[in-house]
Image (cartoon, rainbow, N blue to C red; front, side):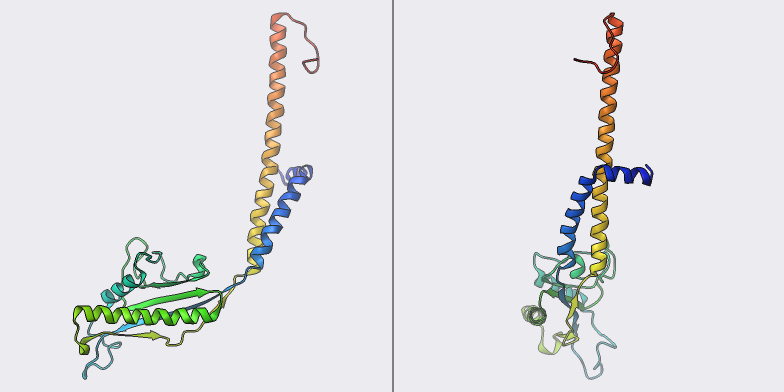
Length: 239
């Protein structure tokens, strides 16, 4: 079908185009005027005990705390484990969430073969106002620290051998995230245009096929009358 034929069909089915345009505009309005969200992301790091000869465990670590970090994350999430994605850079707002908290270990493997080697816990918070985001971030850090203490107390770890926890940064920044209204309107408009043109095309095909079947039935009926020796009338059959 050429562009000229498509334009002719659109003019012929103007009522379908009008209805599709009205529905598309009705969808575009709430999408374009949807408010953004507030979001923050920070790390909670597990630190091993320090010694006189090894004061900086970050520079020269003597212990691997990735397993312990994984246990703490599992304790916090319980039955609601975070979605395993192919990239550790995915964000809560990018997944479409507008209110929630996500605590996970950075996956250094892939979606099918995860690999957790870091003792740094990734925390993300998203909500509709910045005060709620800050409060949830503080509560999450405090809860992680409490779970770490309880785990080590249950295992009978000596106070001098206990791992500690610190948030980085200690005062995470909260950002306002809002998508591009122009791209959102363009995407909705493009999809609406396709969904409007498609019924016009298939409606025309359906009518052409219907007329073709009607013509075929009339031709077959005339042939049967001719074969039976009955009268044959020109034009449409019937009274």
